[in-house]
Length: 307
Ligand SMILES: [Zn+2]
Image 1 (spheres, rainbow, N blue to C red):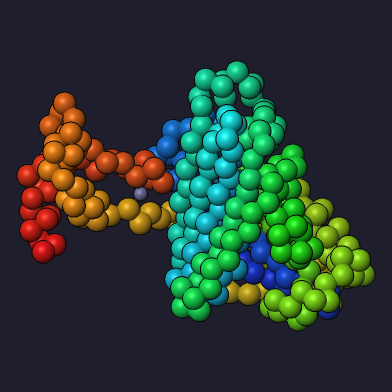
Image 2 (image 1 turned 120 degrees about the vertical axis):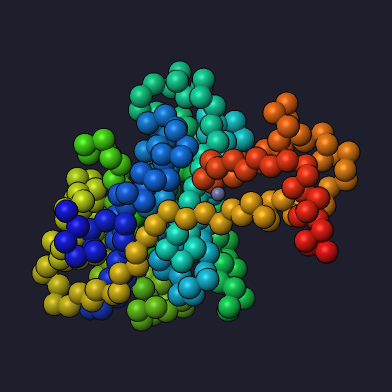
């Protein structure tokens, strides 16, 4: 199925020099299934998290530093979903959703973004430790889909004309998600100068129409390599540059030794209160739904070894 490494669990950068545009395409397959399998969410939440993860891959693969981290967070006060968090580090993706299962069941099979989040916010954080750069933008979570919300993030928060398309669906019982993002670059390919951004730049509407014509089934088709997808959309352009692909995989940075060392610093009576009826202190990682049970005695040795 995967002939060339450009079809599944990969992000691909692209530039269209003559149009002053850059883009990203990404598709997730087995990595997505691996992330979703641990959580056991209802299908509505699985689809939303699948789209959020592919959006995270699109944005994260823009980072230049290998240690750069991108965090996407959608938050509300009274929504069915009160928190969605995904992050990206070096091609590794993870994410989770906190929601109210009873209210979700009442909302029917296809709730709108507004029905899920109510009045919410989308925060995107780019963190590049080597350059000591941290940037966070926050916009109201608006539009009919996560893709539209991301698009308005770039329009409002960064003032970069952007188009974002996301899709997710199941094929033969397996999840696939795909995404495409294009941005107008006013000052050269990777420029961050925004002084001369003009929303009515003649090249941009053309790029937006071509990129926006991508279909959901093209985005999620595991047999359509991403470079072919790009060519389909931009075949009339004199030059389209395909950049090096970024492989994507499930990854979590939870560390049982670290968890133990944190709990070892609590006062003894608080540690004792954490022990469950089964005799274990149980800590879970929300990102990957992994639980780390351990006994009080193991904490003692962790404390000693950290002195
Ligand atoms: Zn974890």
